[in-house]
Length: 278
Image (cartoon, rainbow, N blue to C red):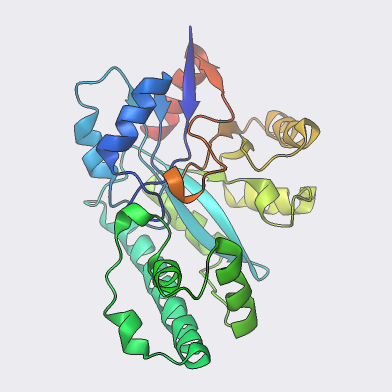
């Protein structure tokens, strides 16, 4: 028997537009049987989803997408495990550190934007966003003010500001995650260098640090041969071949839940569940 799977989904806890109950309804409608919530550096909706699926014939794998910086580039690590919970103090310390880094960057960036467009920085500080909008506080504020109209607009402003966001290094983060017993997967490889293939030195670096797999199925892939490149690498080193839609609800309307459509066998599911339960 094969099961439809999507292990890269965002909710209102970070930059998605769906609350857990809304996401669960869409998952059931599409016949997805195995799924994860992987919000950016937060697990705010994971425990809620655990409760919602209690009486469902679904497999929910708790997850989170953690940011690291490698050679000046922001890289995302999909992290999974049944121990992902707000009661996991060691994990919460990792996420809280990333949140502080992200918040400091947002404040510095918005101070720059306030000066450029002649508004009070305190207007931004006191702004309360609607989670159903998706995105994040700075993006929502600038869109509401009419300063930007799309995601590329805010990234242009970030480039203009010259302000960089620097997360902790992969070695430090991966070591901490593995100590907790979580599995770590390199997210959407085509996202980092305008679709260019990551060379083997790059992949070897992360593999030797202890990552368990690569997201080989993703809407970021433009060519099936690129996906096969990463699948072959995973097969060579007996790593997990993972898949995800990177679904954000209406915030990113080019991505659909469960796309690319992938099914895994009962044997592959057993292997995955054994890893996330360690």
